[in-house]
Length: 348
Image 1 (cartoon, rainbow, N blue to C red):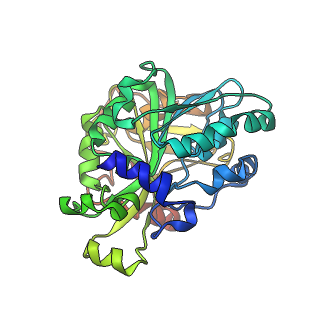
Image 2: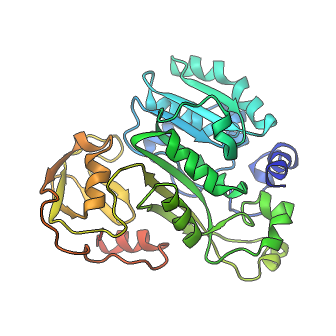
């Protein structure tokens, strides 16, 4: 039911984002001036059929090869195509013919606008990525924008993403999460499914599935509570609360279940476009340029063993262990980004 309903809802029921009945598939985060400028180079018809719930634009993308899972009409793909530049590439995968047609129709228009062609769009089910012409360990970054909630076999998506990423690569994606498990009976409701609600993962189940796929330390980047303004839909949900959140999952060997303290620190020396003064690794890590910033061993690896390494100096090693890094816990993760921004506090 999930794939067929997604194809019908986004290909036939919705004519544009104005037809959505909730704000689940809407992006409220204000893009940076750099991203706004890039969005001006995206064709209006592509933007009109956009249904994302976040900004899937990780840092330092120049030259990267990116895979966009559930690329839809292509807005994120064409945005990222400008950020990776002519030496990089963006491959979009989507199962809705109507949206793929929009993305493909405007490939020439965007290539002329950018001055180079670096996109391709593949029809396929993201639950079955192994059936597509995608080589293992061939992508630096995989993104997805409010799509994984729509598929039934979410474990298959995470496992395939891990297989397709290069060592040190990351899955950076926005999606909808619930504060409890959504009753299975609601999965059959085509509107709740199409509005990205009935398929939303309980955040604890997401954490378990991500780790089982090999992503040992999921990091929350941003989150916002979602409003259910449609009375009929709210009544069906019976008090379940939903959050739109962006996570980054690194494919790295050696990440530990806990954030362990080895007395390490980093110094960010700038150089990443859009984050010259402060680099945001996640909701806990606002790393100001020029300052010594203590971090746990996992965060060390996320910087030292990835494309971010050239932008940092590294202090210490793994030779001495001091226990669990202060401030780590396993409570519900959402809302911490606002607290960090308000207090300037940081933990691992």
